[in-house]
Length: 205
Image 1 (cartoon, rainbow, N blue to C red):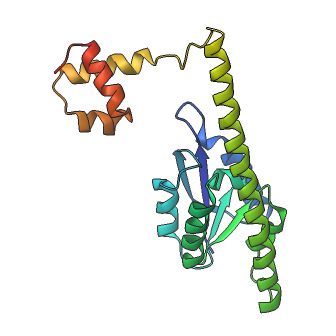
Image 2: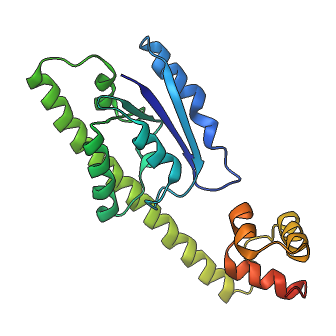
């Protein structure tokens, strides 16, 4: 049994590896060691997460996917959550989350078949519930943010997200240096619309 830790944060200015110590301590308390870590800054509301699927590709049957909280694994809508669960089930991976006590027993050697099936059933149900709660929290937060923006605009105080001046200056320099749009997008993660705006600002064709 290999334990593979998945660490995720939503944005590049958040520390995705923040929970590493807690995960290490959790495994160590059970006499186990984390064999590999997969860290990325991606939204949990989208299914396309390269490091998560690299983890699953590396897994063998019986391996553990260890996360700090279920929302680190999923803030997905119902359809995408079912797709992710199918991938996990196909690899016969055990999901263990620090905030899901029913999953902790999956870190131990398998018991008899009946007990193992009962644990799988209980853990699966609880995992579905926490994934649904995580999705609801995500949707509610987005709605409140949108309402706040509408109110701020109506009051004339909305300023939008602060510009990343350092990054944008570097992008303009890359454009002037003749780098292709595709290579700049791959290197910086900016959108084509942002790139077009910066090209226009810097009079780069």
